Figure 1 (cartoon, rainbow, N blue to C red):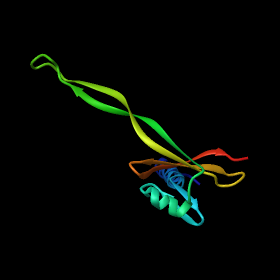
Figure 2: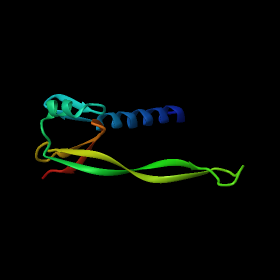
Figure 3: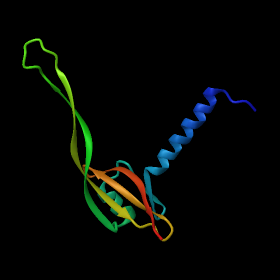
Figure 4: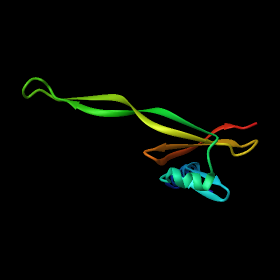
Length: 118
């Protein structure tokens, strides 16, 4: 069976997209918490986390600096700015990965797996 480059790329893109979708939610007793959910919603679905940590996440910020000379070119400056976020860690049971829910401005920004619990 021969596959064209286009069909191979389409299949690869579909697999990558499916992987990202499943990594962006936390299953709690048959209910899912995911990106955009509020802290209240996550607590209602999953209960209180085993820990809560405030983190500073560096994010690039772009600014333009005007030349002090008339007609001089502006320069682009990229700096790292600390964006305050909160990580909640959920224990999913022995042999499973910890669930880490990151909040930004009170809503879920991302969900990822942590270490495996032994």
